[in-house]
Length: 232
Image: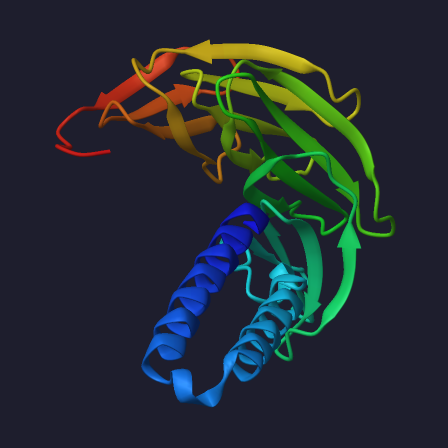
Protein backbone atom coordinates (compact mmCIF):
# COMPACT_ATOMS: atom_id res chain seq x y z
CA UNK A 1 0.00 0.00 0.00
CA UNK A 2 2.87 2.36 0.80
CA UNK A 3 4.37 1.72 -2.65
CA UNK A 4 1.05 2.62 -4.27
CA UNK A 5 0.83 5.81 -2.23
CA UNK A 6 4.38 6.80 -3.14
CA UNK A 7 3.69 6.09 -6.80
CA UNK A 8 0.58 8.27 -6.69
CA UNK A 9 2.52 11.03 -4.99
CA UNK A 10 5.31 10.88 -7.58
CA UNK A 11 2.71 11.02 -10.33
CA UNK A 12 1.13 14.07 -8.69
CA UNK A 13 4.54 15.71 -8.48
CA UNK A 14 5.14 15.15 -12.19
CA UNK A 15 1.72 16.59 -13.03
CA UNK A 16 2.42 19.56 -10.82
CA UNK A 17 5.75 20.21 -12.49
CA UNK A 18 4.20 19.98 -15.95
CA UNK A 19 1.43 22.37 -14.96
CA UNK A 20 3.96 24.68 -13.45
CA UNK A 21 6.01 24.68 -16.62
CA UNK A 22 2.94 25.30 -18.76
CA UNK A 23 1.91 28.14 -16.49
CA UNK A 24 5.41 29.53 -16.73
CA UNK A 25 5.27 29.58 -20.52
CA UNK A 26 1.88 31.31 -20.54
CA UNK A 27 2.82 33.93 -17.99
CA UNK A 28 6.45 34.80 -18.61
CA UNK A 29 5.75 38.38 -17.67
CA UNK A 30 5.64 37.31 -14.01
CA UNK A 31 9.37 36.72 -14.04
CA UNK A 32 11.63 33.72 -13.56
CA UNK A 33 11.93 34.17 -9.80
CA UNK A 34 8.16 34.01 -9.25
CA UNK A 35 7.83 30.82 -11.36
CA UNK A 36 10.62 29.08 -9.47
CA UNK A 37 9.07 30.08 -6.15
CA UNK A 38 5.71 28.63 -7.19
CA UNK A 39 7.29 25.32 -8.21
CA UNK A 40 9.29 25.13 -4.99
CA UNK A 41 6.16 25.72 -2.92
CA UNK A 42 4.29 23.00 -4.85
CA UNK A 43 7.08 20.49 -4.35
CA UNK A 44 7.16 21.28 -0.63
CA UNK A 45 3.43 20.64 -0.23
CA UNK A 46 3.63 17.36 -2.17
CA UNK A 47 6.58 16.20 -0.08
CA UNK A 48 4.60 16.72 3.13
CA UNK A 49 1.61 14.82 1.75
CA UNK A 50 3.79 11.91 0.61
CA UNK A 51 5.30 11.69 4.08
CA UNK A 52 2.01 10.31 5.46
CA UNK A 53 1.01 7.35 3.23
CA UNK A 54 -0.77 5.62 6.14
CA UNK A 55 -3.32 8.38 6.27
CA UNK A 56 -4.58 7.54 2.77
CA UNK A 57 -3.99 3.80 2.85
CA UNK A 58 -7.08 1.60 2.89
CA UNK A 59 -7.43 -0.90 5.73
CA UNK A 60 -7.64 -4.60 4.77
CA UNK A 61 -11.21 -5.99 4.64
CA UNK A 62 -12.71 -7.84 7.58
CA UNK A 63 -12.71 -11.60 6.87
CA UNK A 64 -14.09 -13.06 10.12
CA UNK A 65 -16.36 -11.89 12.96
CA UNK A 66 -17.53 -13.53 16.20
CA UNK A 67 -19.66 -12.12 19.01
CA UNK A 68 -18.47 -12.79 22.53
CA UNK A 69 -20.95 -15.05 24.41
CA UNK A 70 -22.00 -12.23 26.76
CA UNK A 71 -22.94 -10.07 23.76
CA UNK A 72 -20.89 -7.11 24.99
CA UNK A 73 -18.02 -7.39 22.51
CA UNK A 74 -17.21 -8.57 19.02
CA UNK A 75 -13.96 -10.08 17.76
CA UNK A 76 -12.85 -9.02 14.29
CA UNK A 77 -10.24 -10.68 12.08
CA UNK A 78 -8.43 -9.50 8.94
CA UNK A 79 -4.96 -9.44 7.42
CA UNK A 80 -4.23 -6.64 9.89
CA UNK A 81 -4.68 -9.07 12.80
CA UNK A 82 -7.36 -9.82 15.40
CA UNK A 83 -8.89 -7.26 17.72
CA UNK A 84 -11.70 -7.02 20.24
CA UNK A 85 -14.22 -4.17 19.95
CA UNK A 86 -17.04 -3.17 22.25
CA UNK A 87 -20.61 -3.75 21.11
CA UNK A 88 -22.49 -1.80 19.87
CA UNK A 89 -20.06 1.15 20.15
CA UNK A 90 -17.33 -0.71 18.19
CA UNK A 91 -14.59 0.98 20.20
CA UNK A 92 -11.26 -0.83 20.13
CA UNK A 93 -10.70 -2.70 23.40
CA UNK A 94 -7.51 -4.64 22.70
CA UNK A 95 -5.62 -6.64 20.09
CA UNK A 96 -5.01 -10.38 20.25
CA UNK A 97 -1.51 -11.55 19.43
CA UNK A 98 -1.68 -13.69 16.31
CA UNK A 99 0.77 -15.05 13.77
CA UNK A 100 -1.90 -15.82 11.18
CA UNK A 101 -1.33 -13.93 7.94
CA UNK A 102 -4.94 -14.59 6.95
CA UNK A 103 -7.88 -15.02 9.35
CA UNK A 104 -10.87 -16.82 7.83
CA UNK A 105 -12.94 -17.93 10.81
CA UNK A 106 -13.46 -17.02 14.47
CA UNK A 107 -15.56 -19.25 16.72
CA UNK A 108 -16.24 -19.19 20.47
CA UNK A 109 -16.64 -22.49 22.32
CA UNK A 110 -20.15 -23.40 23.56
CA UNK A 111 -19.00 -23.00 27.18
CA UNK A 112 -17.75 -19.48 26.38
CA UNK A 113 -14.21 -20.07 27.65
CA UNK A 114 -12.25 -20.44 24.41
CA UNK A 115 -11.87 -18.76 21.03
CA UNK A 116 -10.58 -20.42 17.87
CA UNK A 117 -8.97 -18.36 15.09
CA UNK A 118 -8.54 -20.24 11.81
CA UNK A 119 -6.44 -19.29 8.80
CA UNK A 120 -2.92 -19.76 7.53
CA UNK A 121 -0.84 -19.12 4.42
CA UNK A 122 -2.35 -20.06 1.03
CA UNK A 123 -0.73 -23.12 -0.54
CA UNK A 124 1.61 -23.60 2.43
CA UNK A 125 -0.06 -24.28 5.76
CA UNK A 126 -3.34 -24.09 7.63
CA UNK A 127 -3.40 -23.37 11.37
CA UNK A 128 -5.76 -22.76 14.25
CA UNK A 129 -4.87 -20.60 17.25
CA UNK A 130 -6.58 -21.35 20.57
CA UNK A 131 -7.23 -18.37 22.83
CA UNK A 132 -8.42 -18.26 26.43
CA UNK A 133 -10.78 -15.37 27.04
CA UNK A 134 -8.62 -14.14 29.90
CA UNK A 135 -5.42 -13.89 27.84
CA UNK A 136 -4.47 -11.97 24.69
CA UNK A 137 -1.95 -14.62 23.61
CA UNK A 138 -2.89 -17.99 22.10
CA UNK A 139 -2.70 -20.92 24.50
CA UNK A 140 -1.83 -23.22 21.62
CA UNK A 141 -1.32 -23.22 17.86
CA UNK A 142 -2.19 -26.36 15.91
CA UNK A 143 -1.55 -27.31 12.28
CA UNK A 144 -2.22 -30.49 10.38
CA UNK A 145 -3.16 -28.90 7.05
CA UNK A 146 -1.21 -28.09 3.88
CA UNK A 147 -3.40 -25.15 2.93
CA UNK A 148 -5.50 -22.45 4.57
CA UNK A 149 -8.15 -23.44 7.13
CA UNK A 150 -11.41 -21.79 6.08
CA UNK A 151 -13.83 -23.13 8.67
CA UNK A 152 -13.90 -24.59 12.17
CA UNK A 153 -16.68 -26.05 14.34
CA UNK A 154 -16.72 -26.87 18.05
CA UNK A 155 -18.13 -30.04 19.57
CA UNK A 156 -21.20 -29.33 21.66
CA UNK A 157 -19.38 -30.11 24.91
CA UNK A 158 -16.37 -27.88 24.01
CA UNK A 159 -14.05 -30.88 24.18
CA UNK A 160 -12.68 -30.40 20.68
CA UNK A 161 -13.29 -29.10 17.18
CA UNK A 162 -13.17 -29.99 13.48
CA UNK A 163 -11.39 -27.95 10.80
CA UNK A 164 -12.09 -27.55 7.07
CA UNK A 165 -9.22 -26.72 4.74
CA UNK A 166 -8.47 -25.90 1.12
CA UNK A 167 -6.18 -28.96 1.13
CA UNK A 168 -9.46 -30.94 0.58
CA UNK A 169 -9.51 -32.46 4.06
CA UNK A 170 -11.14 -32.19 7.47
CA UNK A 171 -9.29 -32.70 10.75
CA UNK A 172 -10.62 -33.69 14.16
CA UNK A 173 -8.92 -32.15 17.21
CA UNK A 174 -9.14 -32.76 20.95
CA UNK A 175 -8.79 -29.67 23.15
CA UNK A 176 -6.96 -31.59 25.87
CA UNK A 177 -3.84 -32.12 23.76
CA UNK A 178 -4.50 -29.86 20.72
CA UNK A 179 -2.89 -32.43 18.43
CA UNK A 180 -4.25 -33.27 14.95
CA UNK A 181 -6.47 -36.32 15.15
CA UNK A 182 -8.38 -38.20 12.48
CA UNK A 183 -8.08 -36.91 8.93
CA UNK A 184 -11.27 -37.09 6.88
CA UNK A 185 -11.01 -36.99 3.09
CA UNK A 186 -13.50 -37.28 0.24
CA UNK A 187 -13.95 -33.82 -1.24
CA UNK A 188 -12.31 -33.44 -4.67
CA UNK A 189 -11.60 -29.74 -4.06
CA UNK A 190 -11.03 -27.42 -1.11
CA UNK A 191 -13.37 -27.59 1.88
CA UNK A 192 -14.63 -24.18 3.04
CA UNK A 193 -17.34 -24.89 5.63
CA UNK A 194 -17.99 -27.38 8.42
CA UNK A 195 -20.62 -27.91 11.09
CA UNK A 196 -21.44 -30.45 13.81
CA UNK A 197 -25.08 -31.37 14.32
CA UNK A 198 -26.69 -31.33 17.80
CA UNK A 199 -26.39 -35.13 18.10
CA UNK A 200 -22.63 -34.59 18.53
CA UNK A 201 -21.69 -37.34 16.08
CA UNK A 202 -22.79 -36.06 12.68
CA UNK A 203 -20.56 -33.77 10.66
CA UNK A 204 -21.54 -31.75 7.58
CA UNK A 205 -18.99 -30.18 5.23
CA UNK A 206 -19.24 -28.03 2.11
CA UNK A 207 -16.58 -27.56 -0.54
CA UNK A 208 -15.56 -26.06 -3.83
CA UNK A 209 -16.53 -29.32 -5.52
CA UNK A 210 -20.16 -28.10 -5.29
CA UNK A 211 -21.10 -30.79 -2.78
CA UNK A 212 -22.30 -31.18 0.78
CA UNK A 213 -21.09 -34.28 2.58
CA UNK A 214 -22.39 -35.86 5.77
CA UNK A 215 -19.90 -37.82 7.89
CA UNK A 216 -19.78 -39.85 11.05
CA UNK A 217 -17.58 -37.90 13.44
CA UNK A 218 -16.86 -41.06 15.39
CA UNK A 219 -15.64 -43.17 12.47
CA UNK A 220 -14.85 -40.59 9.79
CA UNK A 221 -16.93 -42.52 7.26
CA UNK A 222 -19.13 -40.85 4.66
CA UNK A 223 -22.85 -41.22 5.37
CA UNK A 224 -24.32 -39.27 2.47
CA UNK A 225 -23.34 -36.87 -0.27
CA UNK A 226 -25.43 -34.09 -1.87
CA UNK A 227 -24.08 -33.33 -5.33
CA UNK A 228 -26.92 -31.37 -6.94
CA UNK A 229 -25.40 -27.92 -6.47
CA UNK A 230 -24.13 -26.16 -9.60
CA UNK A 231 -21.78 -23.70 -7.87
CA UNK A 232 -19.59 -23.74 -4.72
